[in-house]
Amino acid sequence: MSVSLEGTVALVTGGARGMGASHVRGLAAAGATVVACDVLDAEGEALAAEVGPSVTYRHLDVTSEEQWTAVVADVEAALGPIGVLVNNAGIVTFAPIEEMSSAVWQRTIDINLTGVWLGMHTVVPSMRRAGGGSIVNISSTAGLQGYANLGAYVASKWGVRGLTKTAALEFARDNIRVNSIHPGPVRTPMTAGLPTDLGNSQPIGRMGEPEEVTAMLMFLLRDATYSTGHEFVVDGGAVVGQMRPIGPR
Image 1 (tube, one colour):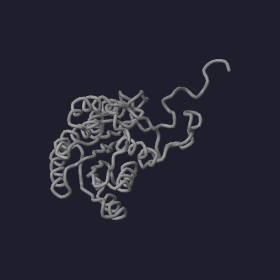
Image 2 (spheres, rainbow, N blue to C red):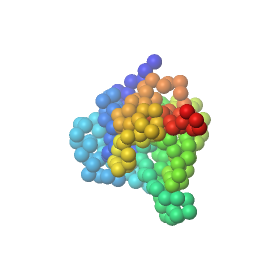
Image 3 (cartoon, helix red, strand yellow):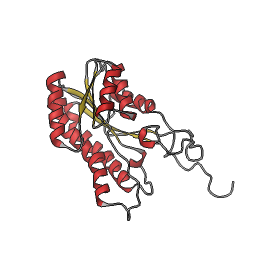
Image 4 (spheres, rainbow, N blue to C red):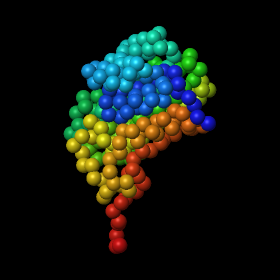
């Protein structure tokens, strides 16, 4: 059983570049009417021009409830009720717990976690008017395990994982499915400068490509019609276990 996305209105946060831009392209190729949202206006406008008339761009700071409310109202008036929400916007911040400032901690939580909550909080009424839909929250392997020096990021991504489960329970009777994707190391502007040879740390010894995460997104939107509240991992096997042997060989 596969759900058609033809004509479905889809909103993608953090949609101007990286994984978000890949998701926008994938949704447009599947026939959706896509709204790419970001604070990177020049890149967002360029992406919309590149992909074509099925994609429009809206400025959106995901930490602002006022902006969320305005964008959702504008999109619904122009295009119709929203049937797909991809909460993709996020940042990563590096610092040990004892050295991280409260300002950096709060900004990470505001964008990565509160932004996801605000997205669902403001979009679900529109999604009900669409007769149902699908929400995909982009978490991380950092929502499945800990990473040293990434305390705020890890906390935010575990929060996204838990919030996804609660939302799935609350919205199921509205014919709205909610799932989370947990990417591992993926080649995007966010990971620029990180090592790309991962052969000693995970089974598939390379970074992933954004399109590989988009493939999972499309599966969840079109084919996983009996799945809600669950984690779907795209990580090259990073969280499977230790690659280096422990003890005598």
